[in-house]
Image 1 (spheres, rainbow, N blue to C red):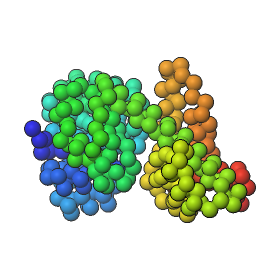
Image 2: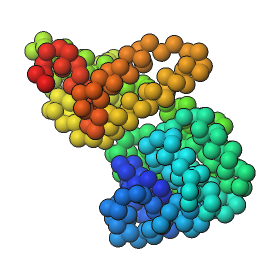
Image 3: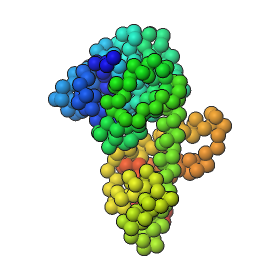
Image 4: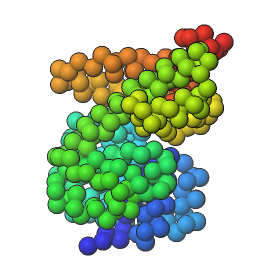
Length: 296
């Protein structure tokens, strides 16, 4: 049965277009964010604006959260005027953020004490996927709860995978973002070497994208990198944060990640260069600097 009353908390690059897609699909949508601009935008499209996560929870049977960090998700769920104080028993929180798996499990446990279910449903596909409603979603949680959320999830994504118990979605997402970062560093090295060798970047792109060296990172990012377009989709600081989470998980599991560790240092360098708010493909600038192609 379709759940008509849906809340969305966190109306940034991903949450705003997700909320728009829910409105287009006919859901009654209530929204909350600390910034006024996206609230006004969604209000003009028919959304109801809540004054706090608690008020939003009281108006919603399913709530999507899309927030940058574990702490912010925790604050929204358990903090003062939090979701847990507003939602009725039987409500569901679907967290689309990328956070620590252990935090997802702990929050789900706290929600369960109040009769509220919580699943982790991190998304992949970038701002383009969020706008088009074509995100991939990796869901961890109880099967019945996941099934109840499927209409909502299908409004924002097309590839929806139930990957295991609570926290499993976060593990899959961290592995995904780890691979994205490693690939972006590789594409950056390829483009820097090609430029130093006098290769036409358009020709390089066309040749490699039909060869064994192709990847999502190359197809989606190399043309923009070559043209100097680093307008943010997924920002450097978010990629850095997710790599730190992946490395923390690996440490807990006793797993060596030498290549990921190097990618993490590259993003650490990007932050040190003041690139943290550019697109994560701006790691290319770190390689340019190291190769004597940037003066500052």
